[in-house]
Length: 291
Image (cartoon, rainbow, N blue to C red; front, side):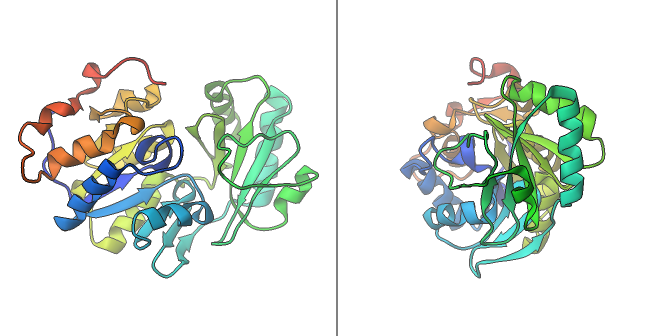
Protein backbone atom coordinates (compact mmCIF):
# COMPACT_ATOMS: atom_id res chain seq x y z
CA UNK A 1 0.00 0.00 0.00
CA UNK A 2 1.29 3.47 -0.82
CA UNK A 3 2.29 5.79 1.97
CA UNK A 4 -0.67 7.80 3.25
CA UNK A 5 -1.15 11.51 2.90
CA UNK A 6 -1.68 13.68 5.98
CA UNK A 7 -4.74 12.91 8.13
CA UNK A 8 -6.89 15.19 10.23
CA UNK A 9 -7.36 12.73 13.12
CA UNK A 10 -4.54 10.84 14.81
CA UNK A 11 -5.96 8.05 17.01
CA UNK A 12 -3.47 6.41 19.35
CA UNK A 13 -3.57 3.66 21.92
CA UNK A 14 -1.57 4.42 25.08
CA UNK A 15 0.20 1.41 26.61
CA UNK A 16 2.73 -0.16 24.27
CA UNK A 17 2.00 2.48 21.65
CA UNK A 18 2.15 6.17 22.57
CA UNK A 19 3.71 5.71 26.00
CA UNK A 20 7.02 4.20 26.94
CA UNK A 21 7.06 1.35 29.42
CA UNK A 22 7.46 3.80 32.31
CA UNK A 23 4.26 5.68 31.34
CA UNK A 24 6.17 8.67 29.96
CA UNK A 25 5.85 10.47 26.65
CA UNK A 26 9.13 11.08 24.86
CA UNK A 27 10.17 14.57 23.83
CA UNK A 28 10.29 13.50 20.19
CA UNK A 29 6.74 12.14 20.29
CA UNK A 30 5.52 15.26 22.08
CA UNK A 31 7.10 17.40 19.35
CA UNK A 32 5.52 15.28 16.62
CA UNK A 33 2.07 15.71 18.17
CA UNK A 34 2.72 19.45 18.34
CA UNK A 35 3.34 19.38 14.58
CA UNK A 36 -0.04 17.71 14.11
CA UNK A 37 -1.75 20.40 16.17
CA UNK A 38 0.14 23.13 14.34
CA UNK A 39 -1.15 21.77 11.04
CA UNK A 40 -4.74 21.79 12.32
CA UNK A 41 -4.93 18.05 13.05
CA UNK A 42 -6.48 16.47 16.13
CA UNK A 43 -4.98 13.84 18.41
CA UNK A 44 -7.35 11.40 20.11
CA UNK A 45 -6.34 8.89 22.78
CA UNK A 46 -8.20 5.57 22.36
CA UNK A 47 -7.35 3.28 25.26
CA UNK A 48 -8.50 0.38 27.36
CA UNK A 49 -7.75 2.34 30.51
CA UNK A 50 -10.81 3.78 32.26
CA UNK A 51 -11.22 7.55 32.44
CA UNK A 52 -9.79 7.97 35.98
CA UNK A 53 -6.56 6.21 34.89
CA UNK A 54 -6.27 8.36 31.76
CA UNK A 55 -6.76 11.77 33.35
CA UNK A 56 -3.17 12.15 34.70
CA UNK A 57 -1.69 11.06 31.36
CA UNK A 58 -3.75 13.60 29.44
CA UNK A 59 -2.01 16.31 31.45
CA UNK A 60 1.18 15.33 29.61
CA UNK A 61 -0.72 16.05 26.38
CA UNK A 62 -1.99 19.47 27.38
CA UNK A 63 -4.89 18.46 29.60
CA UNK A 64 -7.75 19.10 27.15
CA UNK A 65 -9.65 17.37 24.41
CA UNK A 66 -11.53 14.10 24.14
CA UNK A 67 -10.36 10.60 25.03
CA UNK A 68 -11.98 7.24 24.26
CA UNK A 69 -11.55 5.13 27.41
CA UNK A 70 -12.51 1.70 28.73
CA UNK A 71 -12.14 -0.05 25.32
CA UNK A 72 -14.74 2.30 23.84
CA UNK A 73 -17.19 2.23 26.75
CA UNK A 74 -16.45 5.83 27.76
CA UNK A 75 -16.01 9.13 25.95
CA UNK A 76 -14.22 11.47 28.33
CA UNK A 77 -13.91 15.23 27.94
CA UNK A 78 -10.70 16.23 29.69
CA UNK A 79 -11.53 19.91 29.35
CA UNK A 80 -14.64 19.65 31.51
CA UNK A 81 -13.63 16.56 33.49
CA UNK A 82 -16.82 14.67 32.67
CA UNK A 83 -18.00 11.73 30.65
CA UNK A 84 -19.90 12.73 27.52
CA UNK A 85 -21.03 9.13 27.07
CA UNK A 86 -20.64 5.82 28.84
CA UNK A 87 -22.10 2.33 28.72
CA UNK A 88 -21.88 -0.20 31.53
CA UNK A 89 -21.57 -3.96 31.58
CA UNK A 90 -24.58 -5.57 33.23
CA UNK A 91 -23.26 -7.06 36.45
CA UNK A 92 -25.51 -10.13 36.38
CA UNK A 93 -24.36 -10.87 32.84
CA UNK A 94 -20.76 -10.40 33.96
CA UNK A 95 -21.20 -12.94 36.77
CA UNK A 96 -22.85 -15.38 34.37
CA UNK A 97 -20.03 -14.95 31.86
CA UNK A 98 -17.42 -15.59 34.55
CA UNK A 99 -19.22 -18.73 35.62
CA UNK A 100 -19.35 -20.05 32.05
CA UNK A 101 -15.62 -19.39 31.57
CA UNK A 102 -14.71 -21.06 34.85
CA UNK A 103 -16.80 -24.09 33.89
CA UNK A 104 -14.42 -24.51 30.94
CA UNK A 105 -11.01 -23.60 32.36
CA UNK A 106 -11.32 -23.74 36.15
CA UNK A 107 -10.84 -20.83 38.52
CA UNK A 108 -9.95 -17.44 37.09
CA UNK A 109 -9.06 -14.27 38.97
CA UNK A 110 -11.09 -11.16 38.23
CA UNK A 111 -10.97 -7.40 38.57
CA UNK A 112 -13.39 -4.68 37.50
CA UNK A 113 -13.23 -1.05 36.45
CA UNK A 114 -16.09 0.89 37.98
CA UNK A 115 -17.96 3.35 35.80
CA UNK A 116 -17.61 7.11 36.24
CA UNK A 117 -14.84 9.69 36.36
CA UNK A 118 -14.02 8.65 39.93
CA UNK A 119 -14.53 4.91 39.49
CA UNK A 120 -12.08 2.54 41.16
CA UNK A 121 -10.34 -0.55 39.87
CA UNK A 122 -11.25 -3.39 42.25
CA UNK A 123 -9.32 -6.67 42.33
CA UNK A 124 -10.33 -9.91 44.01
CA UNK A 125 -7.91 -12.18 45.94
CA UNK A 126 -5.43 -13.83 43.59
CA UNK A 127 -5.62 -11.20 40.86
CA UNK A 128 -2.27 -9.55 40.03
CA UNK A 129 -2.31 -6.18 38.31
CA UNK A 130 -0.46 -6.48 34.96
CA UNK A 131 0.57 -2.81 35.11
CA UNK A 132 2.00 -2.04 38.57
CA UNK A 133 1.72 1.74 38.13
CA UNK A 134 -2.09 1.60 37.95
CA UNK A 135 -3.82 2.00 41.33
CA UNK A 136 -6.23 -0.70 42.48
CA UNK A 137 -8.24 -1.57 45.58
CA UNK A 138 -8.22 -5.18 46.74
CA UNK A 139 -11.57 -6.57 47.93
CA UNK A 140 -12.17 -9.57 50.19
CA UNK A 141 -14.41 -11.62 47.91
CA UNK A 142 -15.81 -11.65 44.39
CA UNK A 143 -19.24 -10.39 45.44
CA UNK A 144 -17.59 -7.11 46.42
CA UNK A 145 -16.74 -6.47 42.76
CA UNK A 146 -20.38 -5.83 41.91
CA UNK A 147 -21.28 -3.10 44.41
CA UNK A 148 -21.33 -0.32 41.77
CA UNK A 149 -21.87 -0.13 37.98
CA UNK A 150 -18.83 -1.34 36.01
CA UNK A 151 -17.47 -0.69 32.55
CA UNK A 152 -15.55 -3.97 32.20
CA UNK A 153 -14.16 -7.09 33.85
CA UNK A 154 -10.48 -8.06 33.68
CA UNK A 155 -9.48 -11.74 33.82
CA UNK A 156 -6.34 -13.72 34.57
CA UNK A 157 -5.79 -17.47 34.69
CA UNK A 158 -3.09 -19.12 36.82
CA UNK A 159 -1.71 -21.22 33.96
CA UNK A 160 -3.33 -20.41 30.60
CA UNK A 161 -1.72 -17.84 28.34
CA UNK A 162 -3.58 -14.67 27.42
CA UNK A 163 -4.25 -16.02 23.93
CA UNK A 164 -5.60 -19.31 25.31
CA UNK A 165 -7.83 -17.61 27.87
CA UNK A 166 -9.16 -15.11 25.32
CA UNK A 167 -9.92 -17.90 22.85
CA UNK A 168 -11.90 -19.91 25.41
CA UNK A 169 -13.70 -16.80 26.62
CA UNK A 170 -14.76 -15.83 23.10
CA UNK A 171 -16.18 -19.29 22.44
CA UNK A 172 -17.89 -19.48 25.82
CA UNK A 173 -19.29 -16.01 26.45
CA UNK A 174 -21.03 -15.71 23.06
CA UNK A 175 -23.35 -12.66 23.14
CA UNK A 176 -23.08 -11.92 26.87
CA UNK A 177 -20.07 -9.63 26.43
CA UNK A 178 -17.32 -8.61 24.04
CA UNK A 179 -13.97 -10.28 24.78
CA UNK A 180 -10.76 -8.36 24.16
CA UNK A 181 -7.05 -8.75 24.85
CA UNK A 182 -5.39 -5.41 25.43
CA UNK A 183 -1.98 -6.23 26.85
CA UNK A 184 0.07 -8.80 28.73
CA UNK A 185 -2.11 -10.32 31.43
CA UNK A 186 -5.13 -8.35 30.28
CA UNK A 187 -8.09 -10.34 28.92
CA UNK A 188 -11.28 -8.33 29.33
CA UNK A 189 -15.06 -8.57 29.16
CA UNK A 190 -16.83 -5.40 28.10
CA UNK A 191 -20.39 -4.53 27.04
CA UNK A 192 -21.45 -6.58 24.04
CA UNK A 193 -20.81 -4.77 20.76
CA UNK A 194 -18.61 -2.11 22.36
CA UNK A 195 -15.09 -1.82 20.91
CA UNK A 196 -12.49 0.83 20.35
CA UNK A 197 -14.06 1.34 16.92
CA UNK A 198 -17.47 2.23 18.34
CA UNK A 199 -15.88 4.71 20.74
CA UNK A 200 -13.64 6.16 18.05
CA UNK A 201 -16.58 6.59 15.69
CA UNK A 202 -18.52 8.45 18.37
CA UNK A 203 -15.59 10.74 19.18
CA UNK A 204 -14.88 11.42 15.51
CA UNK A 205 -18.51 12.34 15.02
CA UNK A 206 -18.22 14.92 17.82
CA UNK A 207 -15.23 16.39 16.00
CA UNK A 208 -16.94 16.35 12.60
CA UNK A 209 -14.44 13.82 11.22
CA UNK A 210 -14.76 10.46 9.48
CA UNK A 211 -12.82 7.21 8.91
CA UNK A 212 -11.20 8.66 5.80
CA UNK A 213 -9.70 11.42 7.96
CA UNK A 214 -8.19 8.98 10.46
CA UNK A 215 -4.89 7.18 10.97
CA UNK A 216 -4.75 4.82 13.97
CA UNK A 217 -1.81 3.45 15.97
CA UNK A 218 -1.89 0.39 18.24
CA UNK A 219 -0.14 -2.72 19.52
CA UNK A 220 -2.71 -5.32 20.64
CA UNK A 221 -5.70 -7.30 19.28
CA UNK A 222 -8.15 -4.88 20.91
CA UNK A 223 -6.91 -2.33 18.35
CA UNK A 224 -8.08 -4.44 15.38
CA UNK A 225 -11.60 -2.90 15.28
CA UNK A 226 -10.01 0.56 15.34
CA UNK A 227 -7.77 -0.38 12.42
CA UNK A 228 -10.79 -1.73 10.54
CA UNK A 229 -12.61 1.58 11.05
CA UNK A 230 -9.76 3.98 10.26
CA UNK A 231 -8.41 4.68 6.79
CA UNK A 232 -4.90 3.57 7.80
CA UNK A 233 -3.70 1.38 10.66
CA UNK A 234 -0.13 1.46 11.96
CA UNK A 235 1.12 -1.31 14.26
CA UNK A 236 4.12 -0.86 16.51
CA UNK A 237 7.15 -3.14 16.08
CA UNK A 238 6.30 -4.63 19.48
CA UNK A 239 2.69 -5.36 18.43
CA UNK A 240 0.87 -8.67 18.86
CA UNK A 241 1.02 -10.86 15.72
CA UNK A 242 -2.77 -10.62 15.23
CA UNK A 243 -2.57 -6.85 14.88
CA UNK A 244 0.57 -6.91 12.75
CA UNK A 245 -1.24 -9.23 10.34
CA UNK A 246 -3.97 -6.67 9.60
CA UNK A 247 -1.90 -3.47 9.78
CA UNK A 248 -1.38 -1.28 6.73
CA UNK A 249 2.03 -0.30 8.07
CA UNK A 250 4.45 -1.28 10.82
CA UNK A 251 6.62 1.32 12.49
CA UNK A 252 9.26 1.21 15.20
CA UNK A 253 8.43 0.24 18.78
CA UNK A 254 6.91 2.50 21.41
CA UNK A 255 10.34 2.71 23.06
CA UNK A 256 11.86 3.90 19.77
CA UNK A 257 9.37 6.69 18.99
CA UNK A 258 7.50 4.70 16.36
CA UNK A 259 4.56 7.12 16.30
CA UNK A 260 6.86 10.12 15.92
CA UNK A 261 8.58 8.47 12.95
CA UNK A 262 5.30 8.23 11.05
CA UNK A 263 3.97 11.65 12.08
CA UNK A 264 7.20 13.35 11.05
CA UNK A 265 6.71 11.86 7.60
CA UNK A 266 3.07 12.90 7.36
CA UNK A 267 3.55 16.35 8.87
CA UNK A 268 7.06 17.36 7.74
CA UNK A 269 8.83 20.39 9.10
CA UNK A 270 11.87 22.35 7.92
CA UNK A 271 14.86 20.12 7.28
CA UNK A 272 12.84 16.89 7.26
CA UNK A 273 13.72 15.72 3.77
CA UNK A 274 14.31 11.98 3.67
CA UNK A 275 12.44 11.06 6.83
CA UNK A 276 10.03 8.85 4.90
CA UNK A 277 12.66 6.15 4.77
CA UNK A 278 12.58 5.81 8.56
CA UNK A 279 9.13 4.22 8.60
CA UNK A 280 8.73 0.56 7.71
CA UNK A 281 5.84 0.22 5.31
CA UNK A 282 3.93 -3.01 4.78
CA UNK A 283 3.49 -5.90 7.20
CA UNK A 284 5.71 -8.15 5.12
CA UNK A 285 8.65 -5.82 5.76
CA UNK A 286 8.14 -5.78 9.52
CA UNK A 287 10.98 -6.24 12.01
CA UNK A 288 11.39 -9.45 13.99
CA UNK A 289 8.81 -11.17 16.19
CA UNK A 290 6.55 -9.06 18.40
CA UNK A 291 7.79 -8.69 21.95
